[in-house]
Length: 319
Image (tube, rainbow, N blue to C red; front, side, top):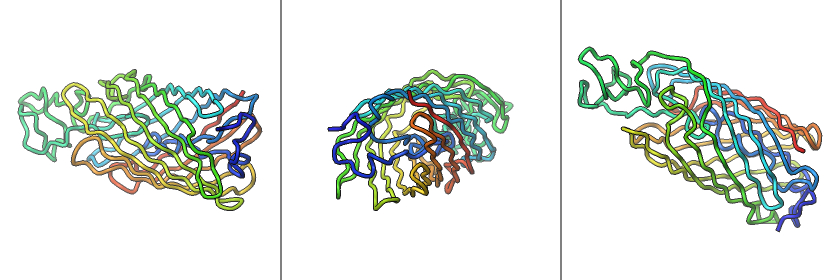
């Protein structure tokens, strides 16, 4: 289906010119799926491995009464094949939060229980306690469970450590033609390697699948449409709902090696009743040489479930 000689049979302009769309932080804070769209299309025959580093910073209140910020610094190792690729992402995370938000699959997500049915030992929360569950709460109102931590609502703590390792793959099922877009099926697994009690992850296994489509229009324009579904694991004491997501975007080749692109992204909230994360992601990708690529991105949230803003910058090397 795909040729390993730097292009695919019948892929036309896309196979010759793609530099990909940056993924940076994405998206919901740490990074949306659009940020991960690096260099679609088959590799050249002599460069089948890629290592990348794209740290991102995001901040916002995510619908709570207290702001949170996250530094997400992932190192990725990618093996490219003629019909797809396989990537392992090992992130280092620094979070400043009261526990109501954490990183889920590379995205900052609100994870408290959204209970507003009173306070006390019943497990309910109130508007005043910021949505913290009250599990384990004493009569003085302390020791409430905020998300997956035991922090007091509004008590922000900065912690750092290993994030959740992600393994993901892509397989091309259709080549780009005159009317046909380039189509790939994707799958990912999030391993619970982060410390949930420190606000660095959920402590549960997630997995998901999706589809990616891209199409060149003329010599300079390219369109993107991606969608997927994530099965979200449940930590002890909290039940999450599964997550559907999509992004739609367009890019313009300013030069042969410089691509500017913009996306709209939406992710379903994993706690019932919370607002979905919606954001606009703007990216720049520059191919320095056959080996080196640079990327940067800015995310602006357009809903309470998304970060107020996020920034990322990174580089990758193929060998």
